Image (cartoon, rainbow over all chains, first blue to last red; front, side, top):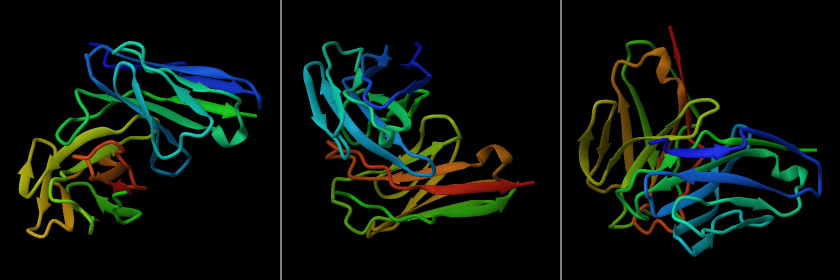
Length: 114
Length: 110
């Protein structure tokens, strides 16, 4: 198993550009989520999904869209990049949503918006 | 939403036991307490999870008192490779929104 994979590893955008961060998992996990981590800070939840076709907002959803058309993939779209979105983005998955399910994190995408 | 309080940073030396305490005053009856570890430039990694009393695995122990308003992660005989940020989480059972706090930055010295 590759686990949770994210592409790209690094990305530089200009203000106003859009792009999609890719996330895929091969563990047949129902629950997937996106976090952002600003320098020296903890992780903040952006969006999450409890299964294909179902998504919901986390703590900081503004400026981001998600969709979940398959169990494996959970892309994160930046609609119009802003410098405030400069951060490291982590995708995570777990077998199911809930108490005893360990989350597996991808390696992260480091995004810089100029 | 669930909120935890942890020390911002801790220092220790190789071979010592390190205890990191997390306060979670408004934990619900069904909530589990979970700890994650994050190395620089990596995503967090699950360490241990518990509901009450004591849980031990090959990496750490987790102590939870009867009132469950706090928990203590214990790392036995730390090494330099244990230098990382450690996060305490709960509200896991209702888990629509799993919240990471700021974590504890642990530095281990030779």
